[in-house]
Structures are given as C-alpha cells and as structure tokens.
Length: 311
Image (cartoon, rainbow, N blue to C red; front, side, top):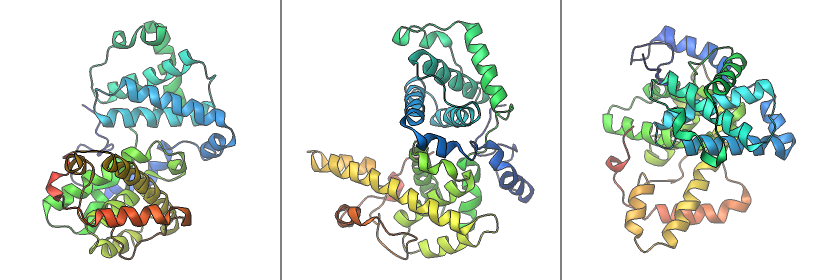
C-alpha cells in the first residue's frame, strides 16, 4: 500500500485520538539530530552540501508528486545529521540525491527507473552502487521510512479551527501546504518539530485568508496541550519571514510584468492577504518599508479563494 504522508500510522482518513497522540509522541524520531542545525551553521560547507543535494533532488523529482520530493529531503536531512557531511564531490551528492528519491519512490509506490538519470552530468551508477547507498541511508534512518512530517498534523490542527465551510478548509490546507513546501529549504526551521511547523503554517495561512477569525485560530492552537507555545511563537515568526520573502518576489514579478492580472491570479490567495489583526509577530525593522508596500498592494487585490489550487 502506498505510504500516505498525511496518515503515516493509519489507513484511516479521519483523525483518531489514539493515532494523534502517537504521532506527537514519536515525531521527534523522524527529525534530524538536535545538533544538525548547529553543524550546518558552523561552516558554509554543510550548507553547500545540503543545498546542492536538495537542488539535485528537486531537479530529478520535478515530474513526480511534490510529496515524494518532500519525503526525499526528509531522508536527506536525517541521513546527514546521522552520518555527518559527505565529501562535496558532485558524483557523491548526485548518488545521494538519487538514492533518497529512489527510497521515497518505493514508499510512495511510484514507478522509478535509474535509467532515467544515467549519464546526467556524466555520471553513471550501477545497480549495486545504488543499493549500497540505499542500505547506508536505511541504516542511518534506523529503517524508519514512514516519516512523520508536518503533513501528518494538518487535518488535526484544521479540526481545532472549527471551520464549517469545506471550501475554506480546503483553502487553508492548500495555502498551508504551499508554505510547508517552501519552508523545507530554510535551515532555520530544522529545529522545530513537524507538528509545530504544521501549526505555524496553518496560522500563517489563516492570517492571510481569514484575518478576522485569525485570533480565534491562534488561541485554539496555542491552547493545544500537544504544542509548546514558545516554540510555536518562534516558528511562526520564522514562517512569517518566509511568507514575506515570497510576497516580495511576487511583487517584483508584478512590477515588471505587463500581464499583471494573470500573475496575481496565480500567486495571491486572497484579497485579505497580510492585513494585520492581532498577529504573533513583528517584522525586522529593516523590512518594515517593504512589508508596508506589500500590505498596501495586497489590500487592492480581488482574488477569489476558490482559485486556490486543490491538493
């Protein structure tokens, strides 16, 4: 049966109390080691290795389900945190990237052919070499391949929001999913548990799409017995930085584009994006000017929630 990142411990599609409790209890077993972030920040070498390997994973998995790529990067981070940084030789990083994709593809029951990647960049890996690397990764991960990720907690936290309209629930889930995908590349979020990342992403989505209800959502999430409020606050601040970075890049695209409406239809989720109403965080002073420009610009948009892509 195909591994479902939203239901890693069960085949059911509705959250059950026992399953939810189990997810929170074991989620740390599916994270990189505690000193992983510090080791990455200690030198540029570690960040380079991670960035290059993630770039290869993104390149080779671009035609697959995005969740497969997310799972492969999860394997990568857990492997690097356990084994230490590999030699930054192109063939080594390429082999590691393809092996992580291969393992993720097997978990997702996705057809994967090594032949599709042979010769790319001048590298050719035989089956035995691939198998040895995969076994090395499996050992480092202690064969825990059914990774618990932020997607495993999305349904649970949405249920706390008490949103009755199915379209609004889908909109929150879709926007939170976008934020989670983007956040995986940011090393600052590696220290947070998957559940905290999921809660922060949903709060960010709610702040954009449903600003009037946002304070209620924030209260419900903060009062959740499974969540550390201080960690949630810190993660939400980092998440807001990621969201603002995305808006800045979109604003630059809009400013230089003739087909402004088309760009906005694709990039903005709601006419209420970034309106302030009891938010957790304040932006760094050097970004205040850009933030005000973005908020003013978003305030003039009229984009229907129904246009948010389905996941």
